[in-house]
Amino acid sequence: MDSCKKGTLHVKNYLGVFFIMTFVRLGYSAISTHLKNSSTSKTMTYTRFLQIKDREAAIHKLEEISNANLMNLLRLLRYNVANDILFYRISSKLIPLADHEDTSDWNYMEPLKDSLVKLQSFLSEHPNLRVDFHADHFVLINSPTKHVLINSIKTLRMHHRILKGLRIAPEHRCIMHVGGGYGDKEKALEQFIQNWALVSSDLQKMIILENDDKTFSLLDTLYLCEKLSIPMVFDYHHHLANHADADWLKQWERVIDTWQFSNLPIKMHISSPKSEQQFRAHADYVDIDMFMAFLNNIKGSVDQIDCMIEAKQKDEALFRLMKDLKNRPEIEIVDGGSFYVN
DNA sequence: CGTGGTCAAGCGGTA
DNA sequence: TACCGCTTGACCACG
Image (cartoon, rainbow, N blue to C red):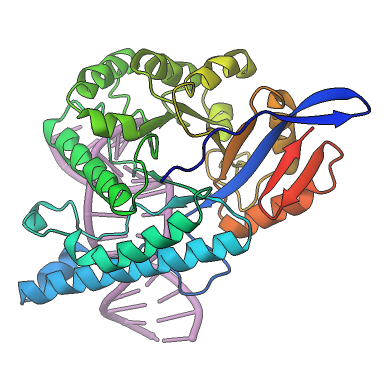
């Protein structure tokens, strides 16, 4: 799918003066608070799996759940398009037990073919839709433990298979964190570089990295991204929670540069702290002042940026943010999910 | 029907 | 070394 090419510069003629504006799209992840019974993460735990005596029946149940998840994914994508939301993070729990050692003989993609064809068809009709994944926090490239690394690669392979199954070019579609600190951050960063060489190049190309809220800061993550040519996703909330130097703007050009070889627009994460006491936890909604402070700093630096909202109230947080943005003089609303910053 | 406990993963902190 | 908390959404047993 040839989607999300970087647009041309959005230049506006205003009283004979040219201003470069930044086009912003908002997105949300996995769940809609409005669309009822639309879970894409229905699951079966391994304990439940073992309780079903007939193994064939248990596998069949897994396939039913996976297909139901994919059909709800289609419903959600339709809902998103109807609401002008063209940026969406797909759940990593679409296929329960896909990577479990006890189901390694199960070809989980085969029974999903019909569902995948329906999704392919919808996605091909909407080439501007940007969808991606966020690997779970136990997917750890820099683990010093062999089986953790092997399981992580296995899980990344599943993400890659799903993207291929959806006929989406897998490049830069899967975000993840650097990993654990293991008591020595510098060593853990070098371990990432060591282990990176063990990851096949098609999986490498799928991955983008995000600064985290406890261990690997903007500077740490940039170090890896520049060294290994990985696009970096800046998480503003994580940066506030974890930094050696608070001044992120100094590094902004470097962040932009990590995307220079990508076909996708630069993206970032936006969320607000739940409270001063629970600073790292995500609030229900995004604080408009915090977001505007960010936008006013970066406007004009890129022609387009996609902002993933990580708020508890999901799509409702997106709608509320769009409503708040309407009152800001520097914002020019385009539709239900995108706007220009002047 | 609502709710607290359980599941799954691995890190991080404490004793 | 051993345990508990953290995180996430789903699901189950209980009342």
